[in-house]
Length: 259
Length: 352
Image (tube, rainbow over all chains, first blue to last red; front, side, top):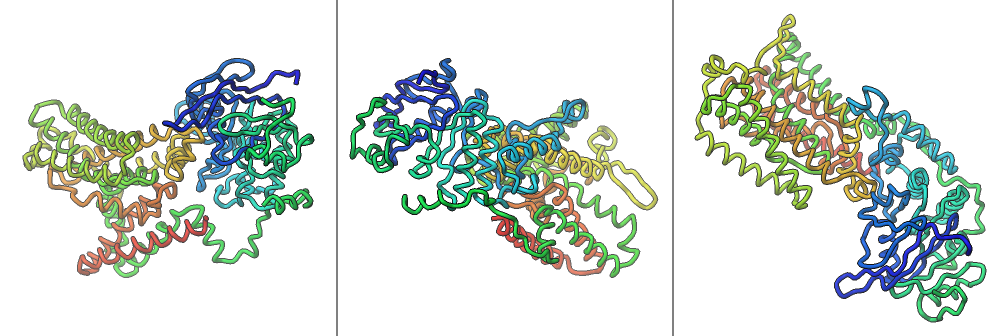
């Protein structure tokens, strides 16, 4: 680990009343890697992810992007820094088209009078970019870029959400349980998609409960327990049952990477 | 659970996620698809069918430029108010105060001009501002206080209507006085005659308004945001849409449009009357629903609303010319409302 992390956090604390969700939590994401975050329910992993994506503001601690300290007041601000999150709910408007959804909140306007004065959207350009982004990720089974998102299958919706994140996320992509709601085949497709995004050099944070999926795609696994990072393990040096034992507290970390 | 998901790593990876097995396109599935992509075609079809049927039954008495443009004049006020109602309902809200805001705005226009002695242009401006303020208050309460739109606008309806009666003292400003001293107030009553066809400025304003709103809703990011907020506000928020700003602007714009309707109302009835237009809120919701806009938000178009308003107008005039009891109109409108909502439910179910 000679590289410096692209996104890191030190000493994050978040209290909800008398409940401590984050207890001096550390975090490191290296360039170009897939980092899986695992942990039991209530371990505080989603709180940590929210703190990294701007959805909540930690009470204490520091987040650094590219070595620079940053503070995100909202997910939109985090997006401006190139951190895109794919939420478990996908955050898409079902009745609107794929292209509309991909550009929601950052629409392109036509140049010249029509765009500047009449505020007309450049639908052709948005459709072209959307189609390009989908085919880059091998999602060409989606035939019509203007079809409503609600007419897509669960896996296709996930694909569109990931494509949206990949299209705009220049620094980091956070995927929250991308395979939780999917069938076997669709999960497979999404895992391939994650590899494709990684191959383009964008690091990914993958939150998942699915151990086989985590062990298949992750380069490193961040084990979260009781509001902090328990340890980081490598999938080739650790068995699945050991990882589960670590996150449930049945086993203590002993490796060199223990944090 | 872990064992089961282990299996999936042995599956072939080249498979596509899902193909679109639509099967052979039947007439029914084609129709469903058209209705799904453009819900306004249903009210348009009903409108054209109604015009043809009444035309066959009544002949020239109905099927003349004069009678058909008379329908336009009769629906102009409701059409304008229903346009305001449309954008609110597209955000999955509702505005019960539209009629009251319309009347108060027209009363402000009249009172400022006649009681305060201000120039008519200033009076009109004050009336428009009044509508804008009423809408902005509703929007603020809905967006920031997260109060249900139904309750907020139910309250606004009462408040605005009471303010209207208190301020006006229930007094009517007579048509002759307006025509003599402040003809600007009756601006929308002016007409353009083309052959037998008569277009008031109010009708032209309604058509321009619907055109402008259609453009804004389909061609600008604000319009896309209105649909997204109505569809799923949380998803819109996470996608980076300014949900609160969008909601406030929608209610504020609706208030302003209602104020224009108040101005057009003076042109239509000639006088400024605090008692006019009492049914405008219910009639505007009727037009919106018959026009195929979903009360659950995010689906439909303003063009559909215009068709909805025209359907009501065609039924009203057609049945009156046939000499039928006016209650038949209400009965048919009631059937149409229920049919329209049934179609909406079918579309929403097909989409899930």
